[in-house]
Length: 212
Image 1 (cartoon, rainbow, N blue to C red):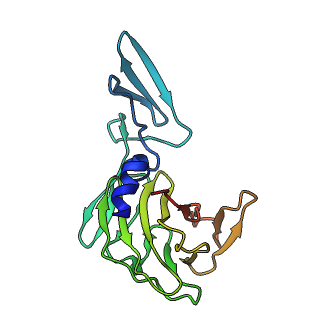
Image 2 (image 1 turned 60 degrees about the vertical axis):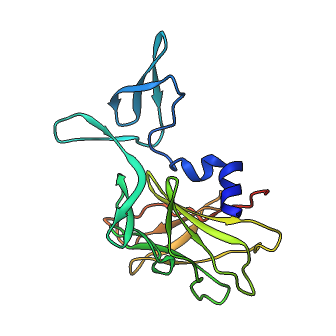
């Protein structure tokens, strides 16, 4: 019931990807991608251009700019973006952790003692994968939602009632020699031990408490 109410009240939260090609008005369509950060669009009676800070396309071998598709599709026992600049694996079992295999980073929700949270099998929901978190003494009425983003992933926690927790915990897996550093905006970034190890920024969970 809480999920269906969330879909009704906040459709973009579940249905829209976390970046990539922006959603267009019904009468607009994309004509071409002149660069990896821009799309030319056709509107009734005119032509426009959308520019983005994050890349929305990549350059293919034939020189054309091909758009990313950050919607998650099934790949074996996990999910992965259909076309993304970053390799991402979203598991059916949340206990396996959402992973960026190329940089050796993983992210999994845990309780205050560090034990992995029990959850339902992940199911595709809109542009992401959703897990219902099992109610325990310290966790009530909550779910987790993972989406691909141009630089990695977003892992959100949905809180459905006043019984939901007000503090969340996560375990971050990192390559040997790496560490975490908090930025001034309170986001967290991995610092690699060697210059050639490229680590994607880590964005802590977005906590959303829908009013239902």
